[in-house]
Image 1 (cartoon, protein in one colour):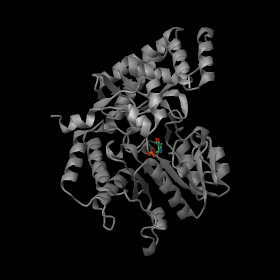
Image 2 (cartoon, protein in one colour; image 1 turned 135 degrees about the vertical axis):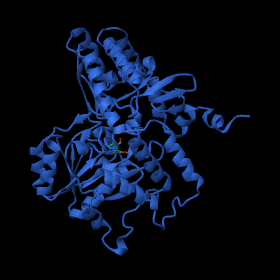
Image 3 (spheres, rainbow, N blue to C red; image 1 turned 90 degrees about the vertical axis):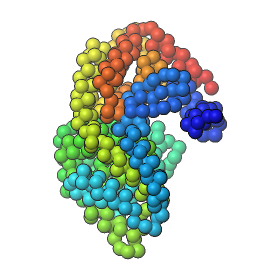
Image 4 (cartoon, rainbow, N blue to C red; image 1 turned 45 degrees about the horizontal axis):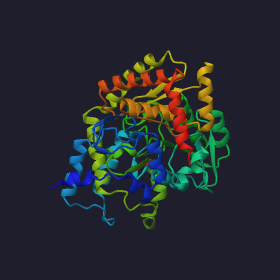
Length: 456
Ligand SMILES: Cc1ncc(COP(=O)(O)O)c(C=O)c1O
């Protein structure tokens, strides 16, 4: 008789998913030869039912900081389920939420003393918009160009790349964008005193792993204070020790009014999000007894998410994964830089901790430039997708290009990634880049991909 696990994992049927969920997603994965049946995911390794081992260098876009299915987080969830405790009574004080909020605020420090829990990063951004408006009594929200803040309507209104918003408007009025890193543009906008908040990622992940210039965030915070605008950091990808410290903000010496966390907060097992904020911001929303429930969400403080969050924090700290992220990041960045230095198509390797990007650029040699430009004209993402596809298919590494910059390969393994994985990854990237630097099979593959993609 089949075990419960076998029953759950047998019968991988992507056609059923295509029929009832999203056919284009299945088509895309098929095209990229990445539609594989994962059966067991442990640490940084993913095992497929046909016997392949894939090493995860994406971490679900910075979800799996503690690795996949960390045994301590799994055990904490099992215990929580077994105790039959208060999961979502709603009309009660969710004690676990208090415990997690206290721990998050202690670690974040500065003026962050309260937490609102949500079930995703986008929902956290939505909450931050509302809280900032309530606090300042202003409507406008300012964001940085090419940011990624989420795909619900409010969060989407804070993203300048039209790919995401096209067809979904009208979005929130009174939003504006400034170039990431430009203090002049920021001050010009803030002077209008229209803006409740300026929201920014300390490292713009999907824009291409763009690291804030050292003084930018500190000066941006000072400008926000001068013009009565709240300074909000989106740390959905950068938080939870991904770049070394608990928050990336801590390496820039800033004290935001709000910080949004999600993704890695619950160990990659339960949806979660959190907005950390000052007492003053919180008080302006929950300002009287009748307003005690003015902003809530059914799943927000559910005991599984809270328990997973507490267990994840324990793992991150007991195993000193922040320190490890910092050290591994230095090692990996150095190895990648050295091994890719000679290739003209590699423009830069940059990052902080284990959030890294390899930026490619157009080749100068004519023999490469012709195919490169031909494919770029068909779709700007083809070059990056061939790199991703080859790393996956030929070398067993899961990666992706950045959502708002197809020329940057994102490198973000779980924080406990082993040196052996990093060394193998460096060899694999070098082999793929070497292939792209000669006019052979890499570019032939691009022709095939382009043909299949645009057949129907
Ligand atoms: C920086 C950042 N903010 C917000 C979000 C939205 O989070 P979610 O997908 O959980 O809604 C994302 C998602 O990738 C993100 O990268």
